[in-house]
Image (cartoon, rainbow, N blue to C red):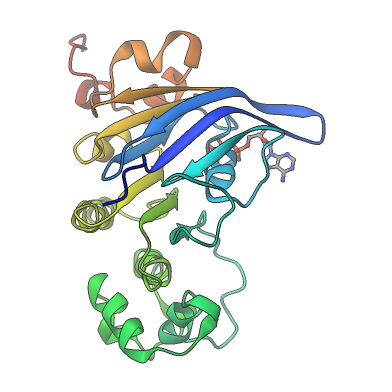
Length: 246
Ligand SMILES: Nc1ncnc2c1ncn2[C@@H]1O[C@H](COP(=O)(O)OP(=O)(O)OP(=O)(O)O)[C@@H](O)[C@H]1O
């Protein structure tokens, strides 16, 4: 067992060009957690995730995964980027897509099969990626992230463009995977989310970390300004335990 926390973010600040996006962010995520990163549009959620996985370099501070300063090749990280629907016309199959996640793209058909079985997409192995539905494609992209046996899995808005049943199935899959690995998602689906996650980080330039999945009015209102998202999605009556007005 690794004695270190899954994620340690220390004094992290970041700016694209000159515009500051994150300022002096500090939080720790324990191994085995299922963390949801929430917050208003443009608040810095995707940027924070890219900084944690090592795709962006902090302007100040640092990020450690399992005790290792990022970026590091010694930590196996799965990353499912925000879903983009462009460029799907080239003839790549489901199997080939998943193979792209193997270390050094070294062929390993049994690993690819195993990853596709985990996401219940094995019968689609020979199909073209462009022929799949949004939900099916998302599962294939998760298989691509899983094929390298990650210790921690990051997913940026995994359920956008997926219907309610597809979302529920996706979160069930993530809950199963969480038995073996730490999971971090960026998501707007607060209604589905609050049933599955173990902690929540609210991001709006700074980050407020909450252990426990209960999303309270205090967390989403006030200084973090997330109330717009909540009201826009019509979820307060389902998510906020103490909210009774109808
Ligand atoms: N590559 C980039 N270059 C310059 N600015 C960027 C870049 N990517 C994002 N930004 C800006 O940084 C800020 C944070 O963006 P980010 O995508 O992290 O927010 P977010 O919380 O994930 O938003 P959303 O909910 O809309 O996906 C925004 O103001 C955005 O315009």
